Length: 461
Image (cartoon, rainbow, N blue to C red; front, side, top):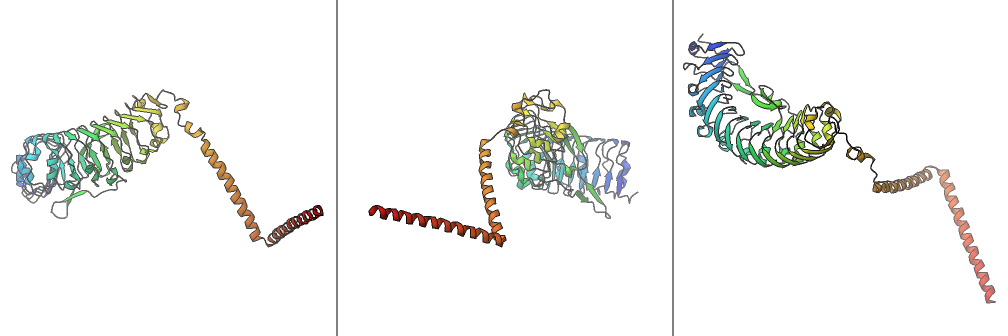
């Protein structure tokens, strides 16, 4: 079969090794044998014409040296296998390589010392290995990346302040369970395309930046973005690669292989962040998951958190939050997972709409000041939110009294004036009445003046 260009045997129950005869297919451009039970190493004689090689989710063993000869590769997916050893520097010299997925193997080494040229990479997945290296140095070498997944490694260093300039196209940044330290730079929130940010389980400190309004991809519901299409140059066939990322969703670990463009999530959990939750966070109306648990956050829950109408998951547990739960939280009609436990929240728990369905008392536990459903603690009158509705405010009553009197005078004046203006007979009668009254008043004044003069003359005589 020398003229065979594409082989797709994915999602079957194939066993054994990859046959050596596959190297005889010299024009083979695309090979997908993912999600099987294959073992052994990749044959050294495999076609160098390959542009698309997907061997993920098997039991392939060996090192990465075999793949360096495939200098036309655009997509290389070797995830979920048993590859070991260090990455050879030649991998980074594959100038056409756009997608590299080596996640969930046992690879080691310092990534930053191996990088030579990575100008074409747009999607890099190295999660669940034992890689080391400086995070900031890695970013400088991946300027065209849209997806960077480094979760569960030993990457260290800080998040560089210039990240919005060195990596302006980032849509997904997953660096959970590493060794990052320092603060979260405000420039990170300048990445307008970023819609999935996972910095959980690191050693980050300081406060949470407040310029969330610049994250335009999260400020509104995401419509379907363009997928990453790789033209492999044969006939009119185009391979669509949507990527796959390990994401903690509703407290569980999921591998998302499609629909990543619709995922809008921020996970800053299990760090040492302090300060208040920025109110600007409520501008992210397209956000679906927010996890800031296990930090040292203080202050109250933002009053307008109900603006996050698409929010499905909210975890603020194990912080130092205080004050009441905002009534606007009852507006979160999509909310299916909530955890506010182990804080210092107080007052009555709102019960409107979706919150009524979240009846697990443990999501509010560890807040001695909370009361109401679904807790067994009954609220007193002083803690009921209805108190504010029946409270008297004398200053408001005085204001409305003056307002009513003034409005009545003005209304009566213009009503009477309007009648005189529109009705001619009434107008004549009104002014005639005024003339008669005026004449009578003048006559009486004149008569009194004459009487006073006569009395004065009488006294003089």
